[in-house]
Length: 473
Image 1 (cartoon, rainbow, N blue to C red):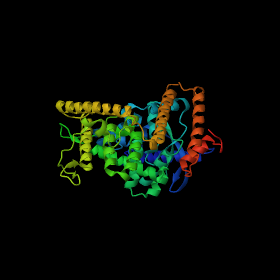
Image 2 (image 1 turned 45 degrees about the horizontal axis):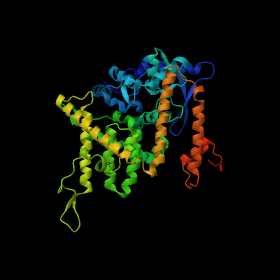
Image 3 (image 1 turned 120 degrees about the vertical axis):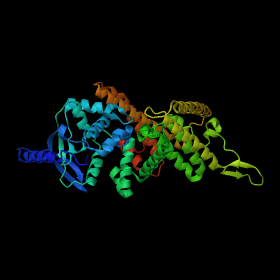
Image 4 (image 1 turned 135 degrees about the vertical axis):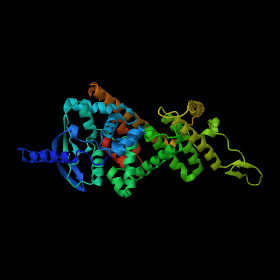
């Protein structure tokens, strides 16, 4: 078992031979441009047999999904270029980020595009034949029974850090074929942090603002905490927990939680923690974004008391009412009670996973807890909604934009599916695109009128809508 590809020397010989043939051929040699150590480099492009190239075991594209099968993940760690590890990588590259055992519609669309139009963009390989960019394309071409793939060849002295930087730079280009999933994007950022890279370099590499970096790290920290709290011991003695992939579809809810939590933390720390625990419970139970918004710091106390046992008087965290001998539960005791209830739900979710090795009694008890909690939570959400506690006015605009972005993501998925089945028609979109353009124009007018702070987002909105200064809505 080795971390060095078995065919390294053979691949190097084939690559050198084909590079030499390419240099001596008549005509203009094809190249592909990459960012290389602070400058631009043009790599020579050659055609290579698919079967002798390796998927990159360090690719960020499927980092979170690797944990769905611990045995296969161990095989991949132990022998990343062996048959078992490479087969697992092929499976994950085809898979839906939220359900890796199902094929991603975006992968099917890529296959269809390659079948109809052929390979337009070359991949990138090391001199050992490891794909740094183009892993998914190789998987799709393999499914299509193609024999060759065009690839740019990196210099012989490419280091591990070079490879990471190249993959990231290529992924963040606007012409990439498939985005990193939410969790894999967070893990790519975390990797840079772990390497000791300064924040200013990370924000530049990922083309994000410092506030966005802070939000991403906060969310990842919350997810890792939730996973730790969900951990239980199965009947086989092995630890069971939720996985990173279980949070792939929760991006919008987690981002709104971060925004609301941070705003509340400054003026009411305990209320912020109470809000965090209650919303985390709702997210674990996969409540909708609009439902999660209904949950404020006092939600359980006002609308869903059965969810959390009331802390007993005299517990740690109780406080004495000034001038009396009366004790009342302090904020910290309330937060601890909420935290215990949320942890119980996280652990119940772990026990009810299809792959969890737990006794029938434990699984039934966990499912019963989820059912009763869901019922109490739904009743509370219904009551909160009917009493008008839907949105804080200060956050309503941002939340509505968040909903609009969710709708756009659904439209993107629908377009990918339509293209994959040959049912996409640009003409059918004209009316809706015209309406969207008009709404963007009006949003730009309303958002920028009387606002002194010209953020990058507002400047972009003005540019994209071709705002005419002085035009009234």
